[in-house]
Image 1: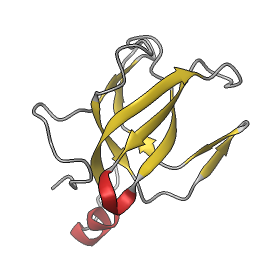
Image 2: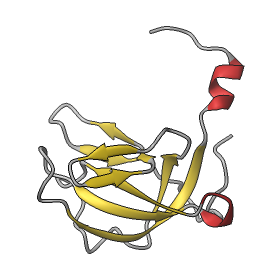
Image 3: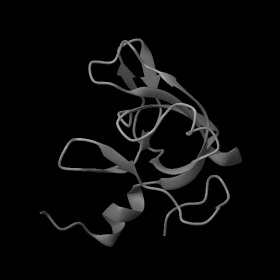
Image 4: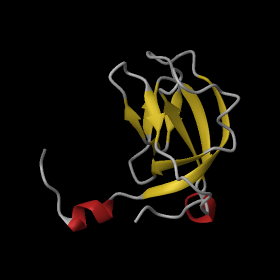
Length: 112
């Protein structure tokens, strides 16, 4: 694994946000959801395609806080434009456990 400098890490905007809505993304190549995540006043609401269907249902995601990278360029995923990367931990079976704060945080707060 390559080492990075502190300055490299500071370039990545990892922020907490709250899932506003979640829906199935049937056009995705791999099973995924379309998420809308509120990252607060500075960043706003961003869309994300998340391959988290193995461990999460669309009904349990709204209101859940997640950690996302908000300064990647937007990415076209089929007919959907993704504006952030919701982070998680890929398990050996390919399922993803979301990276989440363990206590409520203000949307838009940056990971330190």
